[in-house]
Length: 168
Image 1 (cartoon, rainbow, N blue to C red):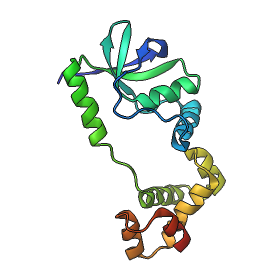
Image 2 (cartoon, rainbow, N blue to C red):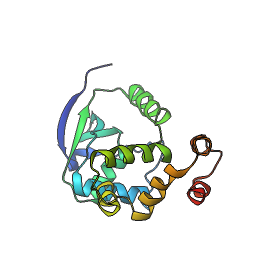
Image 3 (cartoon, one colour):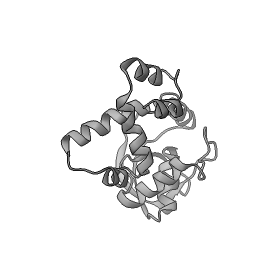
């Protein structure tokens, strides 16, 4: 694979890819949270693009691109690769297939580490920093009260998150 290079692009030079594996759902809560986060902090992980007629075509990062637009950003960090059509499809499929969704118990563990490093942080401050609701933070941290076996069952998907919140 060719080596990519990092740039900051004018968002007007970035073109959406018409053959999305997963369309952007702008009505979903997680998308609105992404817009809020990008509005406050910008894009942390650059999108992947390739040179294309009239600009650069998105290979990976459609949600970050749309959230940048919706939050009013005029620039976006990107890594440019010279992918052929076939390479682009392969990379897009590869990044979708290997996308790992973080589990609630993993969020809980990370938040507990953060609280350990910043013991005076409040739930309200944590919710603001993570662009999550107070209730989401409270429920997720509440998972800490589950037994080790119940935690394992939540991780494996045998206990629903709603039931886990109730148990905790």
